[in-house]
Length: 277
Ligand SMILES: C[S@@+](CC[C@H](N)C(=O)[O-])C[C@H]1O[C@@H](n2cnc3c(N)ncnc32)[C@H](O)[C@@H]1O
Image 1 (cartoon, rainbow, N blue to C red):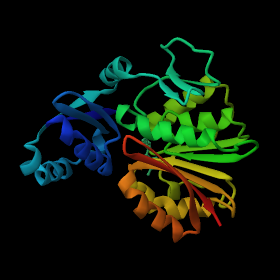
Image 2 (cartoon, helix red, strand yellow; image 1 turned 60 degrees about the horizontal axis):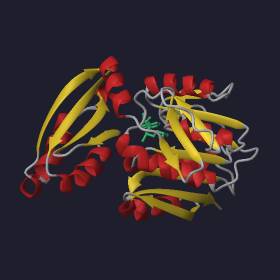
Image 3 (cartoon, protein in one colour; image 1 turned 90 degrees about the horizontal axis):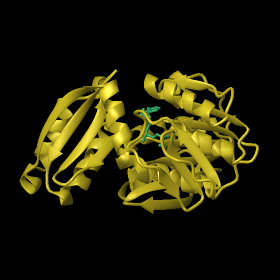
């Protein structure tokens, strides 16, 4: 598997605009540098015309230029290890890589082998989801983590007492990586499915909780499917979009009997907890 590393040269104040726009067209890992933004996407999902259109749209304002190159999985891993920093959430949870030292003072320690599955630009969304999970009761619950990536949110659900956990991702590498990480965190028998939600055979109404940290466009399409997987009283946790997108997401959720309980925001990224009625 190869990835596209896209570089957008622009002043720092415009990076947020490009980050949001690129997330909408499938880029899922970002690195903000001084005068450039780097963004990554699996090669088969890359569409240069979509990138050109975004850069063109903001050309007058930002004077931005872009370039890209294809990189191999191995190079990606090296880059990743250099740039990956632990995520610490509210002094209670620490997500670290196998190559970081342990810090036993954290109540929840999640250990992962970081590969491709989430990047610096998405730390805020993962952080928000972990924070929402820790505020809520997962004891004895059945949980589906859609777009599991490294498996981090599913692992948190396990640590919080969930007893049945399943995970999905469209990316074969994430399936491999999350399975590896479930093992590292003492989780056994976690059914892990590859594909989009409607292609996977799942039990409707059988999950107490669905977690999905993906992006606005995917969520708007898939919220109806998530709603079907939940019984009344079931909970949906969503992230991967900006605070300014909350209205669109909650309107779509309302059409499927999901009402908003709580939102958390960090660095303009949002995460929501909704309950099915
Ligand atoms: C922002 S990452 C989140 C990873 C992890 N859940 C977290 O919170 O850190 C989004 C993940 O969703 C996956 N993905 C993208 N579109 C998807 C879809 N339609 N269905 C399932 N997974 C998807 C990507 O491969 C990626 O692993």
